Image (tube, rainbow, N blue to C red; front, side, top):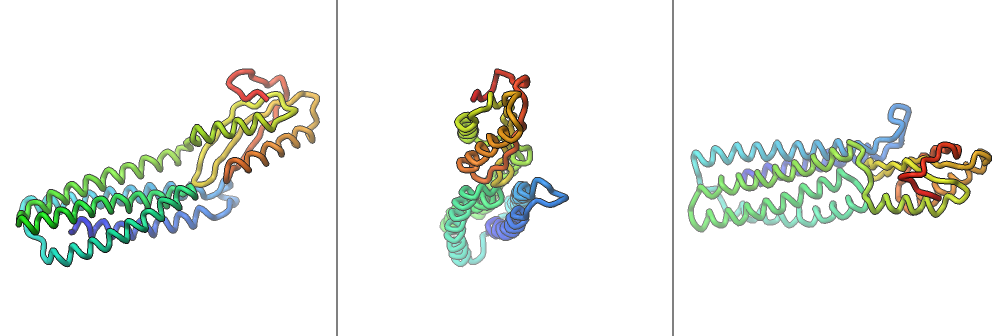
Length: 262
């Protein structure tokens, strides 16, 4: 039960960290962070992953001592009931966090939801193990199951850290979203020659899009700006929370390869 209790403490800490990160990520851009605070959620998710890993190491430590001196858990019935109630609550709350985190594209909330789901699976193993210990009287089962729970938690922590690092490294949006972006540009750039060097990155719920738009050399700045306004409006309709930067270039800058021809 120690492993389950320690994991519950980590749940509380990670929830507080996620809450702080989500609130910070909502702050508007300012003079010091001119692109906004959106990446705060990735730092939060990394911290959550690290705390999960630390909890797993502490559980492994206790399991090691349990192997050396096995003892039957005290008051197993009471411990089983407490763990069962906590597991049901965690399962419901994890589903809420996962659903909202994916909908809001919030790395911090989704990471906390994944962590809770891992806790649910781990606690299920603990409950089964405690029942077996209580029935068989084999005290050695307790540290064995604690070690298995710790390994599961360790894997969960690594997964959270791995996914968050991608966001910190400015990972591109999903292929389907990239396809949508290219189609929208191609369909709404009438009067331009081509668009090339289309790049994307994601920071929390925000999606950053930038590309070069080639226009005829005879086109006025006003006309080129009007095309950009149309493209930006259509992109925002099709890609939620998009921040768009368009570099207008004269026709001699056309590349004629690896581009969206409009």
